[in-house]
Amino acid sequence: MFQIVEAAKVCEKTYHFKVEAPRIARSCEPGQFVVVRLDEVGERFPLTIADYDRESGTIDLVVQIVGASSARMCELKTGDALMDVIGPLGNPSDFVTEPIEEVKKVRKLFIAGGNGTAPVYPQVRWYKEHGLECDVIIGAKNKDFIFWEEKMKAVATNLYVTTDDGSYGRNGMVTKVLEDLIAEGKEYDSVVAIGPMIMMKFVCLTTKKYDIPTIVSMNPIMIDGTGMCGACRLLVGGEVKFACVDGPEFDGHLVDFDQAMKRTVQYKTQEGRALLKYQEGDTHHGGCGNCGGDE
Image (cartoon, rainbow, N blue to C red; front, side, top):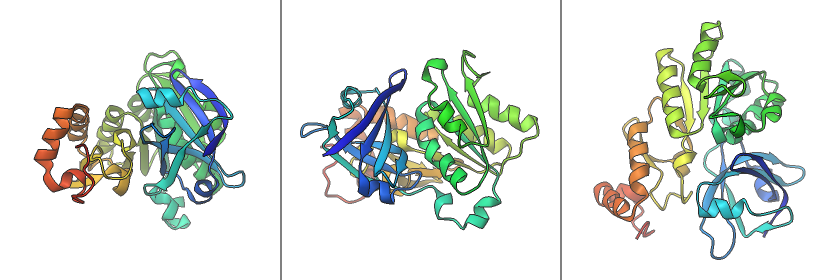
């Protein structure tokens, strides 16, 4: 069992949990995730590691209510426990394994849309801890969906907050802020964008105009988290990839967002899953042929 040492609502429909998981906390890196199961009858679902404390042996998870499992988890309180927390899974962010002298040469901008703030935070904290500078844009529909602003401000060199309706911070989408910053003379060598699929797609369309390499996290399409269900199958540069085992981060300019979004909608129905399995053959579940997938 994994005890919840802190539970709190951070914004509309979104909750934060600090969980005792010493082994995971010792080895996890920015960009990775865990698979959680609430109890014996609960389904498994992936959550990005939003922060970690190696000394106290805790990891932080941020959960937005989107279905039955997430709703059940958001009812848990401090002192409750999760039955299973498996990880760390997925590959760390590229810069974690690159020579620090090379990372220092890159002027980095992180863009967090909605709950993308959670997976962006540990990456920005990593930069701060290694004496590096980076800018951050946080965007949401309105003020009610902004969270961890002060926490992010403490690690970012410059933080820009924007809302679609102008109810807080700047007025407009994150792409507008990105273009405004470039117009103001800001120069970036690399962008990391994490958030809803449609947001990441339009960030990539924007950065492509300026020839700025862009990394995106495809964690929004993960379901099983182990490569068995086939839900996170996507095309990257024309090649079949699975977000949970090959990612979750990819070159955003190579991701086929339209195919991924269309496939995600189709995957939600039993008939849709059956059709995808028929169309995709051995690549539907990564070619293992043994997992049964969505049967």
